[in-house]
Image 1 (cartoon, rainbow, N blue to C red):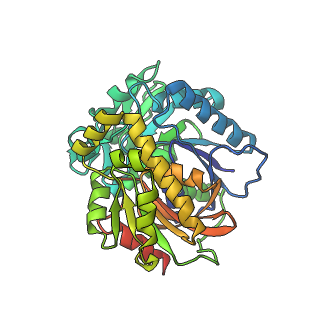
Image 2: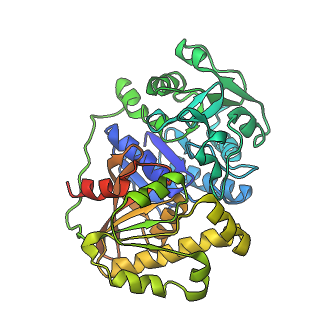
Length: 407
């Protein structure tokens, strides 16, 4: 195993897997740490956790368990993957997990780079940009669980770790100057070539952490070193049924736009009504739809609407309520023959995959940058799942996803 990866949510894990598959790698994606001696036959293995918003000590313990499993199964290098918006709770969990992984691997330095230039995320002078806007001035600042009000990553990370944080500026990276001699290093990256330079200059010397894009140059780098075979291509498995559905729990601006642009029967979940009535009215509506229309069920709302619900029933309870409802619906849908699921939102994706009893995913080709189709077995059926981070994909993503699977 050339690279063992730990992702803090399920959509981030599929994002990473899709980019590695694009680079010709064979990727196995595990949903959670296996509880047995599961054999893996891949140069790149990703363990998807659901730890972004968990209490720091619990998140660190889960990441350590994943890291120990990967190292015990031959991982030569670890990679800690988090969101390209660098979001986490106020006291973690990005830095604390990196510190624990450093202790396990013996690295004296960790490098942090959430940049994803292809999706408009860049880091310059240590500040994270979304397109031309600072993260703290963009719509992405309003994540309902992990809002990001500060775009200065050195300052954000310094609050999470016990050792010094430094900045490796782009002007230093492109001229091959050494990293700052501190334990934690934020790295600038504006173009893909910056990410290539970072990997070339730091591979095996530091603990690499970042968004998915920082891992994209790794397969080519290993091939150049003669440590990885020829690029491989992905295929859609046989036996995949035609029925499809879209489930959206993300409240990001991009997902809300995608919902507006998706022309199919739709049902909007009202959290307060859901508390009183359960999922039965939603299921009754779903059963009346023609499944060849790929209907959509969503709970997405604007920041004001999210705030009202959270004030009424609590932030954590509101999120858990939606996740559990969509997860229950997904199981019922699978049992009536739905085989193609497009799911928007990291927390929603994790809840649905867990409810479906999925533990291993085959990562397929990308629908768009950072979002691949994945395939799994559930209750004896072959399922296709597009697990999408809320912020990813173009305005017509839902149509694009279903059309791409049809060839």
